[in-house]
Length: 295
Image (cartoon, rainbow, N blue to C red; front, top):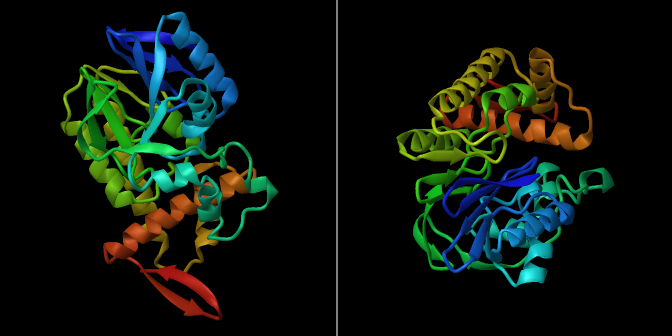
């Protein structure tokens, strides 16, 4: 993991979840996400301070654990103010909501309370809305990019867009099999919004920074559209949601190897079903105390 300069005063800390670093002439630094845990945050701080910068603010693109796990460590060491969008803030301050949401509202058992699903809580000091924003005196543009999560944002500065998980590179998308999104309509609209932007650099949370993401956006879009069509085709007969998870995993050759991954896949499938319902292409029926999805 190392700090890589994208352009003057803009860096990427390359890690399993990329972290953005935007700096000022005065040496203040704004970090975009903080990684999954204290160990990543500690390495990030060391790299930033070795360059002569001091972290003054954190912006979380969204509330998933691999983006907020380092918040408490950095905030405690530096006094950095955490910034986030309105609907992501409750999840950052109460991370238990995330595994609770995945398990359908029930208290998550031990296997669902690992660091990949449950970060330590941190306090958000400033709420960010879409549009211009000044953080540490830096003129930023906050871009609404929901879909992967309910209120995800991107951060644009001086031609560099930190896009969170609004898209991922094609090879990683193929590896994941079932892309995780909670709102398919919003996700597709966010891809359109990304396509309309003209930036010098695009930095995804997973994958390499790129100066042209046209093919990545199209690959992300086509992957989701194909899954919509595939799931809709199966609805000629009634299915329970969990049966569709198994069917889709089998179709794509992926395995829900643990409860966490199973519930991530289940949520992704539910997002497709909800989309199809809202489009008038699916409906539900209760039969023998089972909720069935069908055309």
